[in-house]
Figure 1: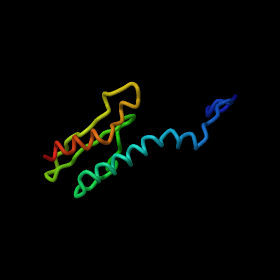
Figure 2 (figure 1 turned 45 degrees about the vertical axis):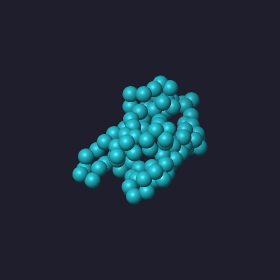
Figure 3 (figure 1 turned 135 degrees about the vertical axis):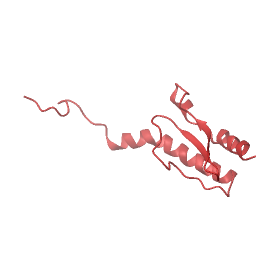
Figure 4 (figure 1 turned 180 degrees about the vertical axis):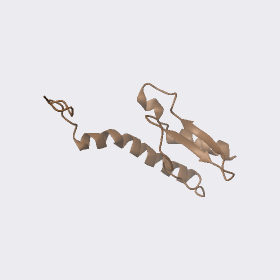
Amino acid sequence: MASRGRKRGARQPPAEALEQAAAPQKRLRGALAEALRGAVAHLPVDINPRQPRRNSFEVSLVKEDGSTVELWSGIKKGPPRKLKFPQPEAVVEALKSNLA
């Protein structure tokens, strides 16, 4: 009797393919952080201070009093998947409007 593990013909994708699949989100996250730092230099930018939601991207502003304002959420957007991730300019505009 065969073991209950993987199927005999199953092959795992190489690690490089997994890294390439995650690369667009990492690039977007870095570009967005740089855009926010450039727009408002005195604000600290934390990337994923807690576990992010699955299959989407969210940007929140935490004010000095501890309240949280959601600047952008891709939870209800898409398909296609690219709609779940914002353009940095849109998030910077939302940040500026919430700070004003």
